[in-house]
Length: 265
Image 1 (cartoon, helix red, strand yellow):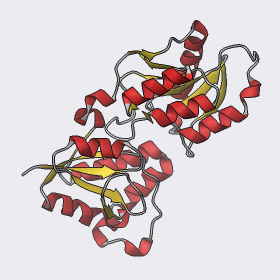
Image 2 (cartoon, helix red, strand yellow):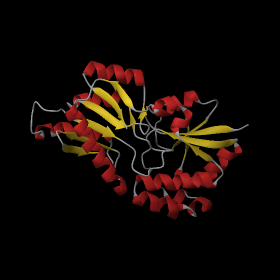
Image 3 (cartoon, helix red, strand yellow):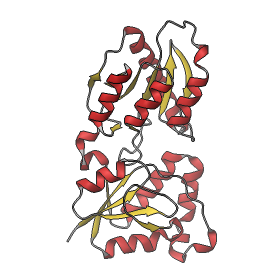
Image 4 (cartoon, one colour):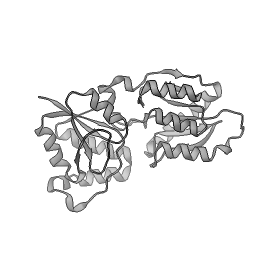
C-alpha cells in the first residue's frame, strides 16, 4: 500500500497537513519540536532513513513547517550517507534554497516523489484577491516597492520578505526570520518621513526560481499580530505563492486590528 511521508517542521503547518493525509508516516529532524507526533531522524543517517521510508511503503513525501539547520555530528555518519555529504554541505554553504534543492534531489533519487503543500491542501495557498480591508494607493505603491526588493534579493538566497513604508525599506528578512524582521521594523518606525502617512506593509513571496515543493513562505494569525504590533497597515503576498494558515482566524484578527490582507498578482 502506497503511503505519504510527512517531514514535519515546527509551527502549525505540519499538523494541518497531517490531518489532511490518510495514515501518513510522520518524521522530524532530531532536535525539532513539531506540533504533531513524529518519529525523529538524523541527517547524518539520511540514506538509512530513506530506506526506512521505502520499506514502510512510502512513495511520496511532503515537507511542512519551519526547519532549523541541524547541528551535524560527524561521528554519526554512516558510509552511504557520508558519500552524499559534499553535495549537502555545498548546498548549505550556498544558502537555504540551494540546501533544500540538494535535499529534494537526494529524496527523489531514492525513488520518493516530493509533493508540494498546495497539492495536498490547495486552499492553503490563496489566489489573487483582497481578503479583508482595502489597501490605499500609497499602500499599493509600498507593496510594489517591497515586491521589487524581494525579487532583487532572490539571487542572493537571503530571505522571502521585506517591510516597506512610504517607499522606504525598513527591514528585509534574513536568517532570524519574519518575527525578527518585524521587530526590527517596529524599532525603526520613526524613520518614516511622514508620521501621518502610509503605515507600511509586510510583503512575502517565494524567491525567484525557488522550487515551490518546499519552504514556501507562511503567514497566519501570529503574523497578523506581529504586523499589528509593528504598526504596519497590512500584509501583502504573491498570489499562489504563500501559505495562509488558519485563514478565517487570520482574516478576523486582521479585521479587528484594522489591517488589510492582499494576495497580489
